[in-house]
Length: 468
Image (cartoon, rainbow, N blue to C red):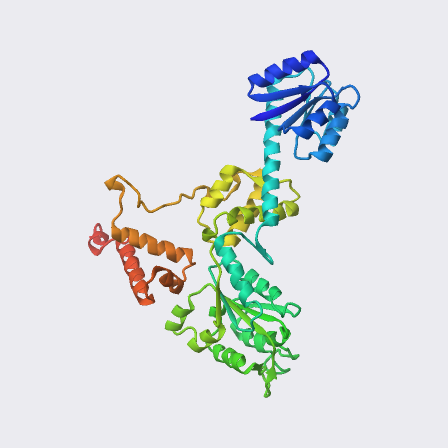
């Protein structure tokens, strides 16, 4: 229901416009002066104000300025004389959303008012979402008020001041480094440095020197001594991301450093003590890596005194829209565009998508949409194709038609794979949720893989046909 406040001192024109607007689905109310309009606006809500430029006392431009100053969310459409470009520009400068010229084309007026009303609705939605974002539950730079995130905040609060080593687990793109930084900022070491290194990003030949330092001349090109990250982080937190990628030959040295609380630089003969809290992170299943001989079990127990699992975005419900609005605001500022919100259909696409790339994928999608859109709201067409085309598949547990019901074996398979996907492929965590031991889960996954290969690959008889 689009309620329009009509301001015009011509009674005949008010009557005409009221009749036309009513016939086009609007709900008009009319007053004869700007002062009356301001009085009515104090007590009643409207979606649009339509005002003539020439009014007794306060004119239409002054009224427009007053409304823009006090009700910036209420769009105003100004009626100007035909061909008066300067007046039209003055109206826009005074804060008008649009203008129409006399003689009035009623169809164009209806389009303008409808567009203005939708703009007002957008402003209201943006205001509500921005207030929700501002007032949402936060933990440092982490945003979200879903139950999984509240559980994460409670755990971070409990362990923040501990000196124990922390292992942060979660799929790629869930924000593990943000969790590590939040943990540091909440700890008693907050005034010390936060030093981060990605173990997968540093060449293996340089990683030992990067972590433990070296003396001058310890190896070719070592023209100057280097302290290393353990000493750089002294008094603060050292964050080792992608810890599962730490070379096997370096793992004993890291274990010894953590046990002795000292390091020996490359080329050195003396131990140098350090004072850091170690936080590590991985998107891999370290239990599986241990079984495969790629990660030392004793090092695992040393770094995993406290485990902090980060929930995937697919488990965070409406947090998707909070994060989307947060990314939209930043992207709009960087792009210099007046993109303020997300249409309802686009929001529905965002909330129904599975987000395999988690928060990182959401951020990329929103930044892309802001770049491409020509509107004040992100539309479905502005989203990446994989999100637009996504169709959620649910287990048909409640189906009444027997032909729609799935076999128990298929339901079990789909549920196991759904749980595995929800925890970012972490088989240990999936087994714990499913109530299975890891070997049983691994065995079933191998069965599924064999079944899939058998389904997609031709058998020998089929593949040999036509080769004679």
